Length: 490
Image 1 (tube, rainbow, N blue to C red):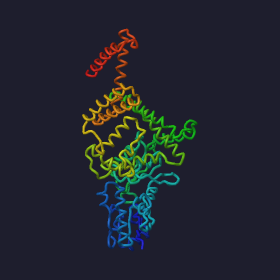
Image 2 (spheres, rainbow, N blue to C red):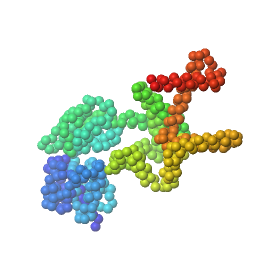
Image 3 (spheres, rainbow, N blue to C red):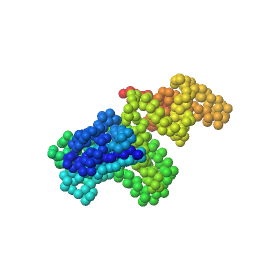
Image 4 (cartoon, rainbow, N blue to C red):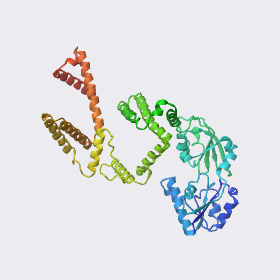
């Protein structure tokens, strides 16, 4: 016999609103379970002959609500296997915002029978005096408000706002929301202490002590959650569909623009100044250009029916959650080294097919980054210098070999030895925990600045920089170098 779970709802709160069918099943089935005893009608199950087992302890011990729901489902399935048939009671209606019931119905190893029940929604419509169909009210889970309400203005009925911190998170999900937007808090609907509190968006977390029998109604939001991102996403779609140039692009044709925008963003980062907020403007612009490249690729894929921007965002979200067990799980990591070690372990577990030393290293990376990654992988298997000094000695060796290749007039050997020297320099930087890309960029900026300084100094002395020999240029160079050093010291 397939284990059977009969799911009943305890209604919005008033025991008189529970259906006759539910009362009959509570009396008929001796093995009873209740998701939470914190409900006005819970006593009908708990006080029945034989009592009932609750799952409130899971809320105290689990790391997240999703973990709680999975633990409850596992316990219910095990109990159903033991007793063949059990009763499971939930607040409200089993079919409205009841995650455990959704998980149970997805199981194939148990039979689920759900009894109809009155939900808190009917009491909410009664208290608000509205027809939800005519008003086109959208029901949102308070715990998922930041994502589920994206792009929506209302009217919204927000459930599961069981604590003031949940209401605060809902409020803070919208940037620059108008403080005077009307809102209605619905508290203990249908009970003696029912409260219908009309307030404003800025005060939704201040006017009442919210609990599991609280919900929030918002007739209209002047600004939706993530409105700017939603508008931006729609823009990418529109351009892809209507602009002749955008319509012709492919993932491959856009590669050059992706690279260009990435480097322009790097330049904007280099130009940032803590004492000059105006430098943020260029950074914002370049980040936007880079973001558009991501949206553009997603718009192409969406049009092809392959994937969407939602798939992109969800994939990176889930990956980051998975790779941060010290934040979202029970793993302890007190240092950056431990975080990176955990990251690599998780990454390797996610991609077991990568068994080679250099599997996963992106060969299309810029050469300096490519060199660092290859050296890091080799170091994992012990193929590395013990310290920076050994790597530094290699530079001297490689420089000598370049000299020999030049003397022998061997272009191929010279090119090869120059590559070896660059590779050795990257090795030294890696051992010193210096990013070679940043170090080289710094050197380039410094060189460029000093050349411009020499040019300006030569003008001041009435000299033509292009007609000066190396001795004269070097003299000016040293003067500029000292001036630069002095300015830094000052």
